[in-house]
Amino acid sequence: MAALGSDVPGYVPGGRNVMADHYLVSPGNPSFPDKAHFIGLLTGNWRQMGWEAGRRGGDSIRVTSNVMWDEIARKCGVEKAPAEIKLYEDQLRAFMPEWLQFVEGLAEGAEEWLSRSEYARVATNYERVLIGSIYHEITMYHPPATDGGCSAFAAKGPATVNGVRLHTHNRHTQYNPLNYEQVYVAKPDKGNAFWVLCNLPAAIGNQVVNDKGVSVALLAGGGATNPNYPRYVGEAFGVSGFVALAYIAAYANTAQEAIEILTKGHAAYREATGRNSLLRTGVRNYLVSDRDMLAVVEVSPDRYAIRYPGDFTPGWDSPHYIVCTNHQVCDYSYDANNSRTDVPMTIFTTAGQGSHDRFWTLMWDMKHHHGKIDKYMAMHIMRGSYKYDKETGVKIEAGRGKDGRPAPWYLIGESTDRYLDATWGTNDGKVAMFDGESYQVCWTLGRPSDWEGAWDAYHFDSR
Image 1: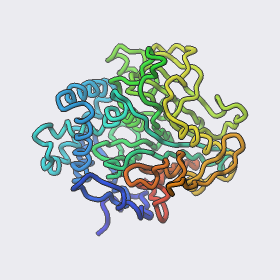
Image 2: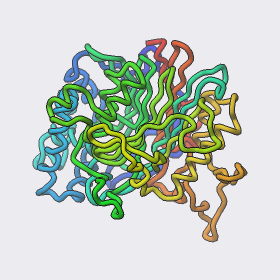
Image 3: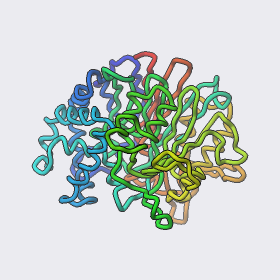
Image 4: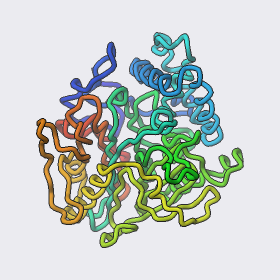
């Protein structure tokens, strides 16, 4: 019997993660699948699309929401969690009310499975689905905040084969419950068609691609407020960065429009809140591209800066590629009223040496492979188990410490010195390629190095 969604034009299934069953799950839960579940095309209004996603997502929605609810209850406390979830919900209602309609539909579509949950008596289906949209806001940015990881690059023009544009992202995080993954293509009644790799009920992942050729990837950008600069906050009850991606996917037609949404929000949000810019939840970086632009947006809850290829990397002035990991490099920022200031975004950096290692590894990959980067080279880079010396560009393969474990540095494809750990690593890899009017996205579930065969793919020109 064909897998659900396998007959959708444009979807091309590939190989699989041959090690997925070794990744650890919560006691009593099923093993992770060996590839993301392609649940097909979602159409209609936002509530209808949510209902279809809930119906097709099946029991993995219950499993994932149970793990998320348990973690959030531990983080916030059972008594405080509802009130704090409400603060995030209020921001989402001001920013994207149709997303809450999607969440309502998702809860209704998955009711059969959610009703079997041990948490059905303590929270509504809607509440347990809503937490998927703010899971990282609470577990990473809710005080006390914690660091995360991700690696990404975008390249085009002379840097690539035949001038195609490539936009990549690896998500470095825990596996449980995030590797119960789904893929869908949404085509709302009003808005753009877009591709998403996610883990329902978290219905938006770390990268979105739409049929206008806009691609945006979200990367963790730091932890708590820097104690040396306490007046510049690092966390707030703001708009989820993942829901910001959903809005961009549906409504942004250019990279510049995406940047405006990430920084200033949109007119209806500003009118509803009285703000002049978007209130965000934490410190993050966004890699943004379209046919004309490559950029990185560095944000805190109420400050932001934008950099372009060659900015803040003396001697590396190519306009044809840009790299992003988890630290900030801009030496300025705009404040909540969109006024440029001398306050550098670098004060928000809490990411360790690993982020810098991955940044310069990708920069050297761009230089070493300049003009030869196609989607296959991009996949090769994103499953790398090496780093480059920042100053010399000498390649250093992952070694072994005295205990036999890998050398302790961040790796693009393997994550950290824990890369043989079954609890934490590269959650998935994505490579989007834009060749004229032909767009395609390729992806893995889990570490790219654990994937055998072609990556799963979706071709927008076949939709």
